[in-house]
Picture 1 (cartoon, rainbow, N blue to C red):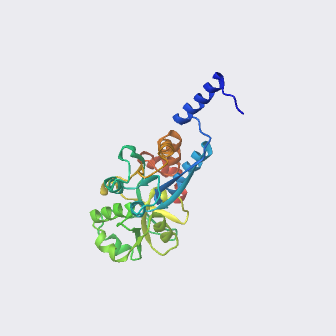
Picture 2: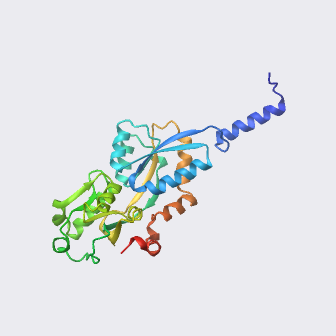
Picture 3: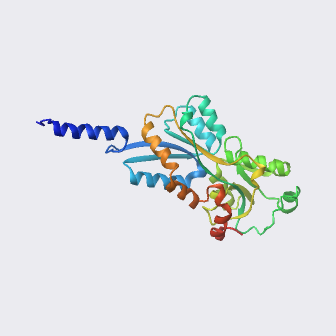
Length: 273
């Protein structure tokens, strides 16, 4: 039998207070993260670091932002949602499935034109509307613009360049940016467009050029906590960690954040021809 004295009562109260403040926790909790496929590399690294330094586990589900949003709408048990487009964030907020007050911006990226290693074309001119009909007649791959933000941004750029009409008949619509990368890496497509950060994950493709950012909406990844989450405290801790210096360091390492492109390009030159 445990005898409660004034002294150990104070200790018990002290521990309970710290547990409520989230500064002391011995309980392991798992949260489910639904994240845009383009964030795969950094989000896995960030989650692993978070797990190592807390008693929590991050279960990651990766897919295109649109597919994930639809899954959440259908009742998928997500705690946090990260989208490559604010359109899908707003969609879920209007459906009262995301807590608007928790929304944060996570990272930025940029679009690049890629090809398999054996494609020798080096000069892709943005001033030539007939470039693709005169210089490249093979398949072209982008993310499915119906639910993949990278595909939507790419289509916006191709239309402004006057390239879409000559490319749409031979364009493959990939289920997400990683799928688009795999199609180019396998040689199934002659060219494709993916995030710069995604292109850096493969040595089977080369970056031919950056798509000018002014041709499409800004590419920003957003995150928010799901209304139906039963683990909002732990979810908020993870969102806070996504905004930390350590997470920023990881994002930059994997080619994210708009201000690092020019400096990172030289460091990643082995993948660029």
